[in-house]
Image (cartoon, rainbow, N blue to C red):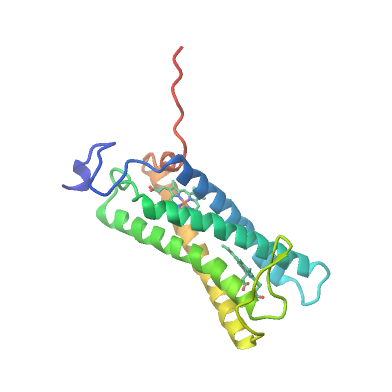
Length: 195
Ligand code: HEM
Ligand code: HEM
């Protein structure tokens, strides 16, 4: 069956109709957390070494990053139990494929970001506190490993940013230039009230 032959609401094998309300909430909460973490991450790394308050910003970043990790883990579990909805009606084959690959890469970067941050922090002398609670370290102080994981953290951040720009550009294109109902897929449906 060609994509163009699909009628709205039609279900394919292994494909669900829409994102659930939980998936929508998790999408917007994780997006908000990620935007805050990006701002905080670039702000704090831009501060000079030993600047007053830098330690507090880094600790806030770590706690917020681990909170994001919990939300992302929940999101991944929900997604593994529920296949993606059929692609937006009217998409060309390559557009649907690009969206699928971009979503996969977004998920991969969302997992690598907190993991690399936490592992990097496990190999330096400061360790990690989660809203004040000290977490276990996974090794001795090792500046080579710390550097490796922080490099991975910084590079994945660039990749994730690039993917988010592509993702948002695609939503804007489909929603406003092609007049397709793209945003509505990630927003709860308004119920019609009887008069
Ligand atoms: C999804 C979650 C996260 C995002 C989006 C994020 C984002 C960022 C960004 C954009 C930077 C600046 C990168 C640079 O300039 O090199 C950064 C740095 C940093 N992040 Fe994260 N982060 C996350 C989670 C975490 C976690 C969970 C930890 C630790 C528990 C952490 C620890 C750090 C540290 C220590 C730095 C400074 C690294 C350095 O000095 O090179 N991050 N983060
Ligand atoms: C950090 C920011 C963001 C990340 C990491 C992200 C990630 C994702 C991922 C992975 C999906 C696929 C969901 C799945 O199949 O389970 C998705 C879907 C979606 N996102 Fe985002 N997103 C972000 C920001 C945004 C923003 C700012 C918008 C609005 C302009 C947006 C609008 C959408 C829409 C409409 C969908 C449904 C696409 C479809 O299936 O047709 N996202 N997002």
